[in-house]
Image (cartoon, rainbow, N blue to C red; front, side, top):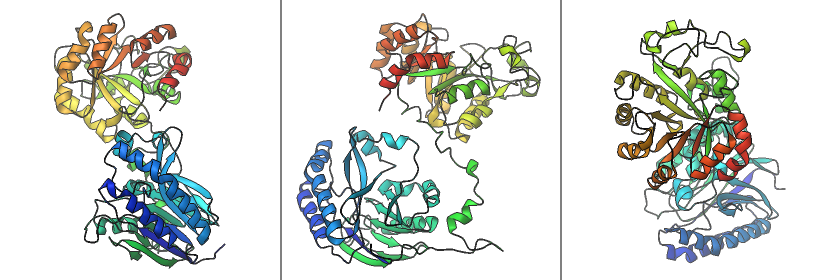
Amino acid sequence: MKPNPMNVCVIQPYYSTDHADSDDLLAWELDALDRCDGRMDLIVLPEAADVPALAKTVEQFHESHAKYTEKILAKAAETAKRCHSVLFVNALYDSGAGLRNTTYAFDREGNVAGYYFKQHPTNGEVFKRHMDCAYSYEFSEPTIVEIEGIRYAFLTCYDFYFYENFANIARQRPDIIIGCSHQRSDTAEALELMSRFLAYNTNTYVVRASVSMGEDSPTGGGSCVVEPDGTVVFNLLNEVGMRTCVIDPAKKYYKPAGFGNPPSAHFEYIEVGRRPWKYRPGGSAVVLPDALMPYPRLCAHRGFNTVAPENSLPAFGAAVASGAAEIEFDLWETKDGEIVSIHDSHLERVSDGTGAVWDYTLAELETFDFGKGFGGAYRGLRVLTFEKILEKFACHTVMNIHIKSRNNVDPLGEEYLRKIIALIRKYDCEKYVYFMTGNDTVMRQLGELAPDLGRCVGGGNDFDHVVERAIEMGCGKVQFVKGHVTQANVDLAKEHGIRCNIFWSDEPEEAARFLDMGIDVILTNDYQRMADALGERLAKETAW
């Protein structure tokens, strides 16, 4: 084991947009590794060392993988052992489900000591190259690979832009952050700023290796080493070659932490005053947004309403805790313009009140008991507002929001609809909601006021032509009513890329027939029983 300090070597090759240069560029990388020697304790190469030139097509991408991945990994292992160095190189990794963007950590004997899978794959990696990125949609702690007592953390290229993750990395107390990068469009100043910001916010050395876009290019490059206080040890800018320096991984930066407080790392100073509820939703409870949540799904109609009163926090909470991909609820406007979740237009069935919802203010509705049934277990339950639903469940499930109106023809007040939309944006829930209504006038209003939010056409006054109406209004979903769905309707929807809901089914055999027809979402009142009965099929059909 080599003691501190450490001699660090960063390798920055030239990058070409001509795929025909790949052989020469790979040869340059292999030669650079051959030029490494036993004085080096740590060697870092950039992202995509096995795709050394631009792969403009999927075919070229896989060609590079087939020709170069094994070669660069074999040379990396050989170099680590020959130089008795710790070495990091980014190359493709076959997970069995596809290729992953991976940083390999080699110990001083040339053995793989750990892997880091890029946590923020680009859209090109996900949708064009169809790489295995399923892991990036799951909760995980920051990756730490410990070698000889030194804790290494990682960022790869696009990962550098997600500053909200820096605090989580800092919690792991790494000594060095390895940044295998390919950031080609940012300026040298911006790239250096990001590396300094990262080092300062994590109290960690940053060792970043990237690719040169040409000696005179104002963008790209920027391979560097930065100390924990943000001091730049060196920055290669767009120079092609190798650079070494000496660092002490044990070195940390502690600053005054306010009057009368002992010195602390910057992230520790920040942590004592953190207010996480001020941020965007994050963490292990956040699920895939509507556009990525796999189909087919079950939607808990009015929440899990066989175990708790419908359209209540207990019903929604039970559904979400049980794993419901979607919940469905109904919204009405009160006399004073507030937004409440009640299914019926009148109060008698769901509360001890009487009369129409719209004849009462929110304060008046809150005097009624909405805890009917269930042996009195929910006695005293009060009316639920839309904002309360968002406070508890934003980004924890997809929300099918049924916008109720007194009839299926007249418009709703624009101020009221804007209030609904504003609350969705307030809770950062745009990607997790879609509006459902059978009122085409309201549907068009919503399309004008919030064209980015999903819309689902309901039966309204024309149960048999929901698909044609959806096509005409440019909506991405329809919600059939049982008894008004045919295979021809479903097929027509699929031809136009429209997703199909069915209202409703509480019988597994019936639900299975709907799935056979191509229905994407089944609304159900008895979530757990239906999930248990259809779970194996749903799991199979929704697997990544």
